Image (cartoon, rainbow, N blue to C red; front, side, top):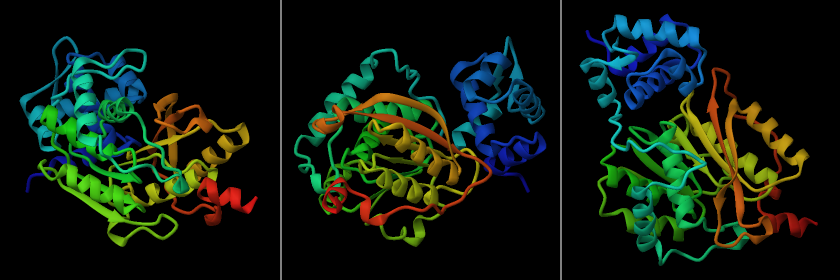
Length: 335
């Protein structure tokens, strides 16, 4: 019986002792697709894996007739077919660069997002809602795409008053990208109803569930997703709680991805947040201050940091936190 593409990637990861698992092999193949022909050094740099390990994986991929060398690594037809089965086709050839202005297609998507969401619900300040700018919403999705978190992925939005789910749908529809599924969990039914209404014309699998994150996740959402994205409440315990629920929702495999946004905090608070992330097996890969811009949230200068994390082999889903101190107004009432 022939192996599925997923099983093939897992076998290659096992044969090469790749700690990043099947996700690491997927990332290598996707990087070749986007930059072929590519040298082993540039390939290793692009995926953040040591050169000797990438060389071993490349040899295994060549043995399986997925790659060949022609002035660098290139995909064979079999390699292209394997990626297509995973939903990866490089239909958006633009590359995200934090130092550069967004390319023209993203500008068009920003205008489309504005038209689609002009009548969005007003933010509920009691639960720390504050809308990101339309540019930020599209920038987030472009950044997620750059890091392999859109094509063929099962994506979870933990709270979505920023309407990132709508931005993902617009992005995927514009470029013809296949998505596994999008699930939105939010305590605010207004947000869920709005997202459902705006996405009815698009052929993507979108699920919306009303949920208070102080309660355990619905059972079907445990160990189910490739990616989660969240812009949590402003408090330290709020960030920790949403990170906890996201970690519980990710598939229990190395290489799954978390995108977490949070405002500027004192050093002790940042240390506490990173300690919790480490306890959850979420390893920071990149932190971009000022990535997110908001219509409001002036207490934090209308901006926040984007943090991208990956899961490793060692994942845990328990940390200590104060559920009575999740939202800013709760903290004020206590004080």
